[in-house]
Every structure is written in C-alpha cells, then in structure tokens.
Image 1 (cartoon, rainbow, N blue to C red):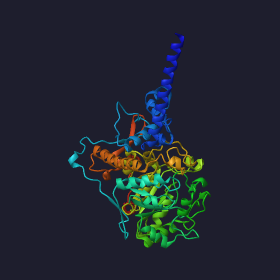
Image 2 (image 1 turned 45 degrees about the vertical axis):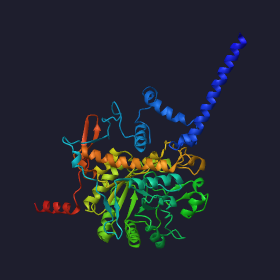
Image 3 (image 1 turned 90 degrees about the horizontal axis):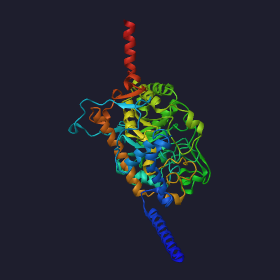
Image 4 (image 1 turned 90 degrees about the vertical axis):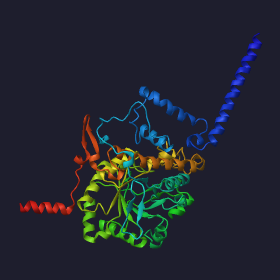
Length: 503
C-alpha cells in the first residue's frame, strides 16, 4: 500500500514538474518571439515579474510603498500615463485623481462656463519658423522630439523615433552627435543640432565647414546651435568610451573607443555678437532657419542679445530660441551640475518670453520650451507661458519602453534604448516602437487641443496666461497673468515714460 501511494506521489510530482518545465519553456519561447515588451524579450520568463509587480503595486503601494507622485525624476503616474498613451490605451482613469491640487506649484486650467462645441473647433494651424528665410520650415505640430544623439541612444532607438516622427508629422532633433543614416529613415522633418564640437559639419581643425553645412541643409529643415543644456550647463556633451563604436566614431569624426567630450562652449562663439553673426552666416550659407538652445541663469543674457540685435539689425535675430530648463536630462552628466545649476523652466521660460516681448521681437523669434515636459497638461502650460512649441526627449524614451533604470551612462540599458549591446537591442523592435512613438506624439498634440476646448478656445494656439492658475498654497491659486504680467513692448515703455515726464 505504501509503495502504491509513493508511486502515485512520484507520478504526481513528476507530472507537476513536467508541466512546470513545459510552462517555462513555453513562456521563454513566447517572450523571445514577441515584439511588444523589450524587458520580456531581453529577459525571458523573469522579465514577466516586472509587469506582474507593476500591476500588484497598484493595490499594495498604499500600504507599503511611496505615493504615485513621489518618485524622481519621473513618478509612476507620469510614466504610466505615457505607457498607456503610447500603446493607444488612452488616458482614462477611474475613481479619482492622485494629483493633489492643493500642492504649491500645481497647474489648474481655467475652464469656460460654456466650452466650445465640437463644430466650433478649428484645426491647429501650422507655424512657420524662419518666414524670412530662403527655405522656411513649416512646423505642423506643437509637441515634437528633442535632441537625442546617435551614440547616446542606440540604432534601433533612433530608427523607431525617426519612423514614429514621420508617422505623427512631428520633427526630430538630431542631438549634437551628428546626422546618422538612421535619422533619415521614414523621411521625418529633422532639426540639426550643432554642438560645441560641431560633429558632422566641421573641418579637420574643428571649425564650421560651409560645404558640409550646404550638404546637410539638403537633408534637414533647420539648424540649432547648442550653447548649453539643462542637465549640464557649462559642460560639453559626454559620450563614454564604451559607446564610441566604429560607426559612431565615423559619424562624429573622432577616435574609436575613446571618450567623446565636447568643449564646454563653442570656441568661436564667446560673445552675443559672435553668436548672432554665426547664426546669420549659417542662414546665409544654407537658406535654412537657425536658432540656438540655452539654459538661462538670469535675464541679463537675453537683454544683451536683444540690444545687440538692435545694433546689428533685425536680420541677425535668431529664428527660434530653445529654452531648456535646469531640470532637463541627459545620458551622462556630473551630479553637481544636474542638481544645482540652471533655472528651472517655470522661471526661465516666462523670463525669455517677456524680454522678447519687451523688445518687440516675439513675433520674429519662435520660442521652443524644453525640460521635463512629457504630459499634455504641461505642454499646454508652456503654451500659456508663451512658448510656440514644446520638445521632449525622455517622454519619447518612455514611449519606446524606457523603465527609468537610470543606467543611460553605463551601456547596460535593459530595454535597448541607450546601449550598444546587440543582445539588449534585440528587445527594441523598431516597427512596434515606431507605432508607439507616433501614438504618443499624436495623443499629446490631440489632448492639448482638448484642454483648449475646455477653456473655451478653438485650438491650442489660442492659449494665453489667463487660461491657467498656479497654486501658491492649499486653497489659494493665482492666475498666471498676475504672477507674470505681460511685458510691454520697448517702444510702449519709452512712450509711457515720455508721457509721464510731460505730466
């Protein structure tokens, strides 16, 4: 009898082990063959735990874990919203918001008592950058892809972003690492970023090469001179040696396997005058719009810029200015710079816009906002502040499947986005991720219009500062136009002063 029981137990556990083994093999094969989830593709079977824990966390975090909105640099609520949006699952939630509208700094849009009916909505008009140029750039959408260099991000990541941008009709900034063949896939609009090392458009001595600029102008819509970026003001771009592959080295014109460290500023741009003359020169050579990207520490630089434009003439004005907040991100930067240098966008954006308005240049110079703007609400906030466009890098990284593992500088990214490890890159399936990039871009651009309609506007281009309020303390908010009153044009200020003296 004991022998029979033992035999049945042996058969039972043998069958159980066989079923378990079959299940593991089945999951392994399924995970390797599927293309939707990079973590499961790179880490078969065990990668499933990440998604299981993510779902369980929704129910258990109220007992054991941090609040949805307490994580940094991006909290769970933000990441989850981007993941759902990129998958086309929409931004619907149930029961109530986890956003504390009493918290200082919270953004509250001023809804209209009688919002616009659907038949009153109008399409969001495109905006022309560099209307006075020989080859102006007609930008179709407000929300676009910020600079991400090939080398800092992987080949399939660049391919997916380029193809997704083409599908959604948004532009893609090349980043300072030069134009790779993968940026050209899909035929999206490209903005070429000229970093301090001038990768891709320099001669053997590191100076701007007019012939290279002309050749590049046939493939891109505009040029952006990068003075600084939010994560590392005063520090040039850094690409760790393990990311400088043969292909990256060829595109940038640098030695293979050596750290790529750009100068902390352009050697030929050491003044506002030099900056304006360099932009004028590039515009004359290429016929394309030219602007610059900078992090701001005060209004002094903008005032000097505008005064110099008055002196040189309006033709020397930039076609656009990309305002990067100190909260911006990057692949690699010293922590002391990323933590403590550069004004946040909430302070620098209205400052730049107001100075341009004061000198009456706002209609001539388009403003692009950059720095941790990943959701439609904060894109709309930037428009209210006075931005004409918004760009995001990390938001689009999340749409590719980034899980915020904070390993961008180590070449060990588990989702294949910021690594040149071929095995890890297999997890990032280009066609699948391109669809998610396009969906994310589409829905952000769609939702800012939904917010506009709620505020009684026909489209998002009509946003003004009076359409949003900023919470100062629990139970007390102030309209943005009261916090940052619109600046008068310089001529109007002079006229007012003259009238006052006459009185």
